[in-house]
Length: 338
Image (tube, rainbow, N blue to C red):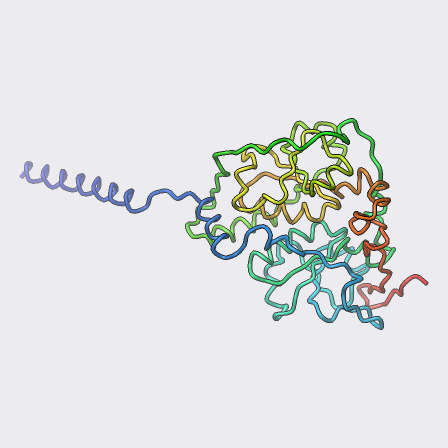
């Protein structure tokens, strides 16, 4: 009897070992980054799709000059409820950034216009919406451009800033090739589910930007990417130690980014770097966007050069001073300034 019991016990143990071994063979660990990158490639969600033509200048919109609504768009305002109540675009809906995807279906197929204070945070919302198939855009310059009442954030940050770490000579650092990529741990197994989890993480991140004073004090703390053309680099200079990964920044070009570093992306306004970094962050990169871009460092030089006035706060063709009417929480219209 004891021998029979021992045989049964041995059989049970061997069965468990065999089952566990079989399960290990059937369920090998997956590389979530690889699965996500393949999903983005297959579904045409490379960076140029996410950040291509993402900003709409208010001057190019069909704004009703009687009630100052934007009839062709479903307007989502992601500012605080307090600031929204104080003044907003007619028919806009106030939604926290973290909940923006839940609002998408309510557009009923209309293009979505995302509005924030300066046009920077809105880029993250637009990235999320585009990842999920919505036609979405930011309002360039945000509410700061809509009416002078809201322009303080841009008016106070478009300036000149002298630093020995902004230099006018030299070429970009030659691209390195990295052989590893970020490790993603969402515990999901399909590209779609991994994407959803990563979008949620990106939208909940509130520490995605950094000021010029911090960056220029210690640029060596970052893997700096100047998101400009070579012509602009040559014209205006750059942050010391910067790479220039622009045309190559896509799924195939991720090999040029250090997966272990904090990637600091900067552009003219902080708007393009915001949406670009949102895409990178979804892929697992640790990123920061330079707040207000180079408008906060070389504003006068940009304003004086014809090639960059449209990217410069206050530029004659920038669309940064629209002077449209807005509404408070009680529906009272505040007219444009005469």
